[in-house]
Length: 172
Image 1: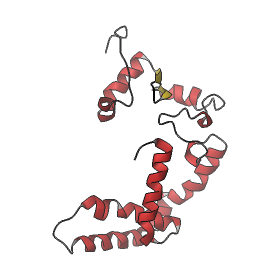
Image 2: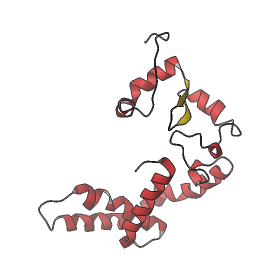
Image 3: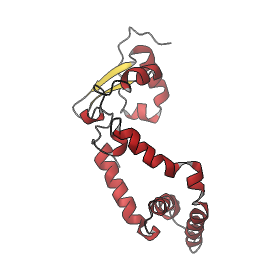
């Protein structure tokens, strides 16, 4: 156990914390379970105790609201999963049905066919990039399938999804 009187700076976005967050978050829980991270680019709070998150942050919607953009990535507001109750709960309920194991299992034959097509295409040449030829197209085509979009449009879907990621979390 570390000495809580020793000066310590917690940076949740530092390369060392991102590479191995466990030790840093363990120290955070010991030294400063409710931490205000303020830099030129960011201004947010990090809490590391489950009870605190559940009983104070999540239960105090008027103070800890996404509308203030007080999330770690300075997220944009008013998008389903970064909203407050009751809208968030309704949004989640609408999505949840389509992501239940039984619902996803219904797509198994189509997903298997997509995977087989991608593998067959990879077998036509000796070398390639697994991520570009299988790792990215498979989930993108699966999402197109689940959204009722043509799977051939997966590159467009992927571009839109990447742009949304950048808009919401300022990262690719």
